[in-house]
Each structure stands twice: as structure tokens, then as C-alpha cells.
Image 1 (tube, helix red, strand yellow):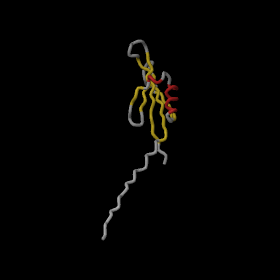
Image 2 (cartoon, one colour):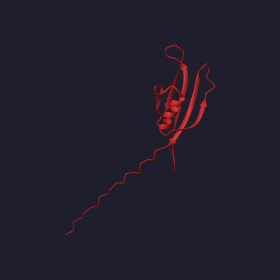
Image 3 (tube, one colour):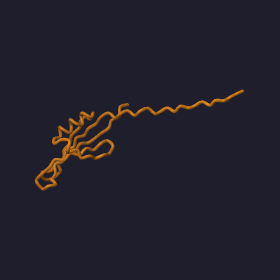
Image 4 (cartoon, one colour):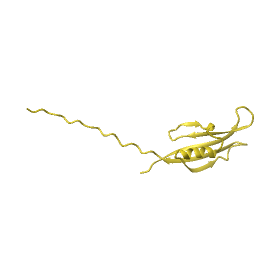
Length: 102
């Protein structure tokens, strides 16, 4: 049975830390629960989505949060890919007992 793993790319527009206006930040939420700032990998959502596509991720949905005040933006890109198949369990080799009859 095919199983899926999911990830989330979040694009957020927020006040710049240097007080010179606004900046766009991208955060990747991986299937293992990790949260990574991936902003240095590109300055557009398309750059990040293409990078994720190269890693086997498929965009399945996009949502925007309209409840944020002012000039803030929040976009969520929902992705999935087939989960790698787990390797079969290792078989244990059982050594037979040798009996010496004589």
C-alpha cells in the first residue's frame, strides 16, 4: 500500500529586523517535525517550490491567511510525496546445533 509523507512551506511577510521596511521569510516544516528557515535558498515561492519538486515533493494545496492585519501576508504551500518503502526486516540466521554421535 502506498503511503505518503507531508510537508509545509510557509511564506510570511513581516517587518524587517533592521527597521527598513518589510522582508519575506520562508520556513519549511518537514515530515519529521523539523522547522527550517529556508529563506537563503531563494527569494520567491516558485524558487522554493521548484527546489522541493526536485526532491520529489508535489504541491497539493495552497492557502492564504486573510485574518492578518495590515501588510502582513501568510501563504501556506502543502506538499506530499510517496513515503520511502521501509526495508524488509533482516532475517536472522539460526545456526543449527551439531551433535556428535559416536
